[in-house]
Image (cartoon, rainbow, N blue to C red):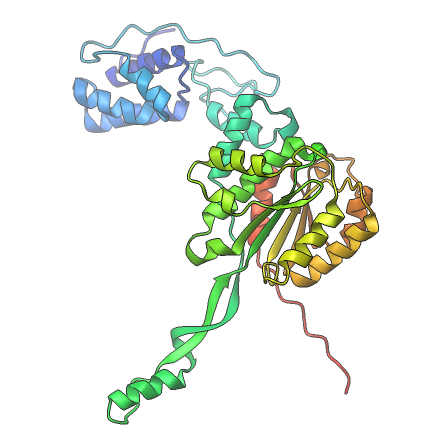
Amino acid sequence: MAEPTDPATAWTLAVARRLRADGVVVTAGQVLACVRGLRLLDAATDAPLRRRVGRVTLVSDPAGLAAFDRLGDLAGPPPRPLPPVAVPSRPDAGGLDAAVDRPGAPAAPDASLVAGRHASARERLRTRRFDALGPGERAAVQRALAELRVTTPRRRSRRRRPSRRGELDLGRSLDRAVAGLGEVIDPVLRAPDLRRRPLVVVLDVSGSMAPAARALLGFALAARRTAGGRDRAAVEVFAFGSRLTRLTRLLDRRDPDAALVAAASAVVDWDGGTRIGASLDALVREHGPRGVLRGAVVVVCSDGLERGDPALLGRAAGALRRRCHRLIWVTPLAGDDAFAPTQRGLAAALAHVDVLLPGHDLASVEELARAVGRAVAPAPRRAYAP
C-alpha cells in the first residue's frame, strides 16, 4: 500500500495507528477531523500546533490522552507508520469499512480505519439484554443511563403566578392603586403556574428481576438527577421484594455508584421473594394520603411473578390507578417475541395499566423515558342527563 504524500494525512495516520496499538479507539471520523484541522490551520509542519490539533481530535477519553502524551516529541518528521492492528471479526460486525456503507464493498485505501466502529459498539450495547451483559458492558450501560434525561409532562397548578396575560390579580392591583393615589394605571395579571407532574418509580428487586433491577434503578437515579429545584421533591423511588422500602433520599448522592450501592444495601430483601400485591397496597395506604400519588406518573418495574394472592394485586393496582395520572408497567419478559401477559400477577393488574413496556435492554429503557415524558390528552368529561 502506497504511503500518503500529504504531510497532514501521513502524520495523522501514523499517530492514529500508534494510538490503536496502545488500545485507544480512534474512529475514521476523528482521523478526518484531524486532517481537516491540520490543513485548515496549516499546522502540518508546526509541531506544537500540530500536537494540539491531534490531541483534541484524535482522543476522546482520559486514557487516550495519557496514551497520546506517551508518544513523546512529535516535532520531527512524521513517524514511520506501524502495521495496522488486526481487528477480530465478529458475526454482527456487518463488514463496513471507512469508505462505504454497505457490506462486502471494496476496501478503502486504508482498511484499518473501520467506519462507525464506535457507533456500532454503542448500538449493539443498546440492544444487548441486561441478563447477557459482561462486567465492562454493565459499567457502560450505567454510564449511558447517567446521561439519560427523564422528565414528566407539565400540568396546570392551582397556584397563580404573575403573567402578561390572564386574569386580574385584584389584590396586587389595588395595592398598586393605593400607591398611585387611587388610579389603577398598571393592573397586575396572573395565570396558572405550570409544574412537572410527580414521578413515582416502584422497582421489583426480587430474584427473578435481578438482571434488570440494577439497570432500572439507574433509570430511577437518572430521573432523580434530571429533576432540579422544586421538581426534585416530586420524584419518589421505592423498591420492593417481600416488603416496600423508600429509596428517594439515598439517590441524592453525588457519586452514582455510591447511590446504587446505598440503595442496594437499604433493601434487606434484595434478590429475595416477591409480594407485589402487598407492596403496592402498602404504597397506596402509607404514601397515598401524603399526596405522593396524586396526579403522578407511576412506573412499576416488575415481571409480575407474584407469590401472594393475585386478587390483592388486582385491587392494589386499581387503587393505585385511581390515585395517579398514568400507570406504566415495565416487565423484562416483554422483550421476548413470544411474550404473552399470562403471569398471574401481571394478568391481574393488566386491566388497570395504561402502558405496558419491555425493560430488558438499554433501548427499552430509553423508550420508557420517552413514554414518561409523553403528554396525554385529558379524557372527555362525561355528560350526565338531568
